[in-house]
Length: 98
Image 1 (cartoon, one colour):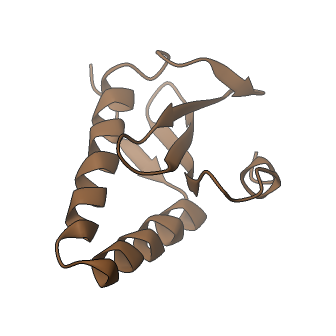
Image 2 (cartoon, one colour; image 1 turned 135 degrees about the vertical axis):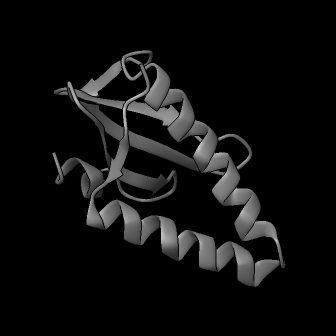
């Protein structure tokens, strides 16, 4: 059973800003970023407990080809994305959302 993936507002903002940044670097690169993130969403929707817990009940998956991680919390009825997070940022930012 695939669960719906729901992004918190902060995660949606991070995704949108990253998409725009990549698209400004090269036409189409934003779409490639979005596709890579969608692959993560598809994996965690299909098997939300596949990844290790990193803090409390939050888990992490890595976006292939881009320096991003997706931090998420599985629930019985959905997967809640807490952050679409660039690896160079201070982890305290996403941790504050837990």
